[in-house]
Length: 623
Image (cartoon, rainbow, N blue to C red; front, side, top):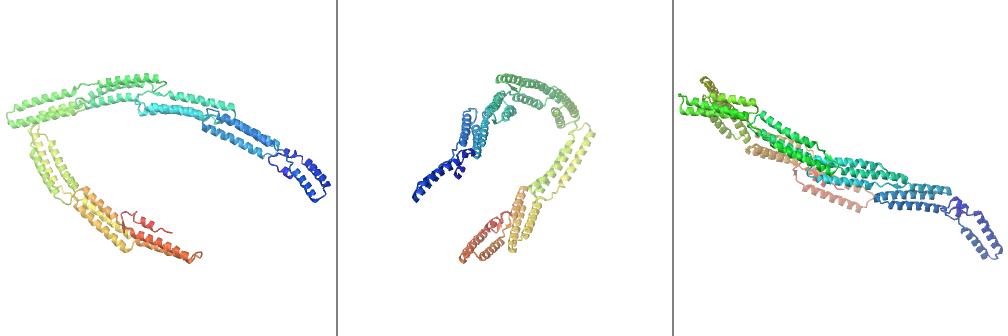
């Protein structure tokens, strides 16, 4: 009875069906009958064993769970075959659906194994086959791939278009992406799996419709190249405006009128381009729109290029000045109180006035400025009375030459300081020369000529006095040497603040810094330019900065202290033999020696503060 109850996978009903009571009765009867006829002990044992063997051989029939699991497996196999046969699913989608199917079957089998009654087995089987029936994958990846492929092809097509600007390409690709994303969102909104085949069909239809629309929408993006056409017109307009602006024979009013005409023609062409769509539904419609755009561009460029204004205002003004000069020359020639040289000079002055006036006319930008330059020019030509200016200018120039020689002889100045001082002297000279230049070469009356001459003489005196007074102070070299001294002080202070250095190490370092500072200041004194001074200063500062003594004694002491500590620790170990302690201490001593040797190999000074202790720290690490 105990063996029957322990039969695995048997339900309670199957165990009861084994008819334990009948077996007990039958087998007992068999034993009793055989016991009644035995005459020896051997025969008795044989009869007993036969009975117990017969009882042990009577086991219940196990069938319910196996049949249920077979049904679940059949459902699983059928579902797997259907999934594998679905041509719309990618391998990844098939794998996911099969895994879901296998999980449902495995959970059902587990529940069947755990069941103890026929009803429980039936319920577990039904739940399993129902779960398997709910595995209905929806094919989405191929649909998404179709849209992605269409988008990739469209983007490649757009990128190959040499007539589109980057902005137009981006706009077209963004539009294609937007259309693709809209349908991809619809695909993603569908479930990856449906509980029923009908629901899966509905979802699949939605996916397929979104795929078809997405591909069609992406293909409908056919950009029309408008920006390059508009740029060609804009470039031609800019070129034309630049040409107009470069015309010195036109006034602003004449330029404005011409540019307005060019802009109007450019706008007309640009408006015709803008009237075309930026995108067409088909390549054919796009080609039609592109033809219209190109035609408008060609006409616009040609119309703008044809704009060519005729100058009128400035030529008329310059003719008036030439007429005034002719009149002035006739007047000079009629003067009997002038020598030929004076007449020649006066006529030269008059011509210079006329030329200046015509140059002013050329430089004028408005009608009003042209009129003003013309009036000033004709007046200036009419007012020719010589004023002596050359002697005054020569006096200032001689003073400037003397001052430049004096400055060049200064050894405490750099070339730049000399240049600055000479510039100061020249500026002062130029300022007074400018004052002299402000006076006319000719005045329109003797009284006006005397006033101008007085102003010239005053400017001469001021110019000579101010140029002579220039006396530059040396700045660059003293400042550079002070920077070296400050760096030396800072370095000495930094060395003194180092608690890891011995007094001897500090003295060596400070002596080195002092020597580098001395060399730098000598180089500064020998420098002739600001750059050379800066180079000498920078080199000196670098050399002083490179004085970074390496504290080796403290490092070696730290190694020795650590060795002593380690030896004490080893000696205190009661779990080590004397030989083990000696070996351990020998190992520590070897490592300490290696570290000390590494410290001794390091320089006494490092180029940078960062380097000064790095290797020492590495060298002192041992265990």
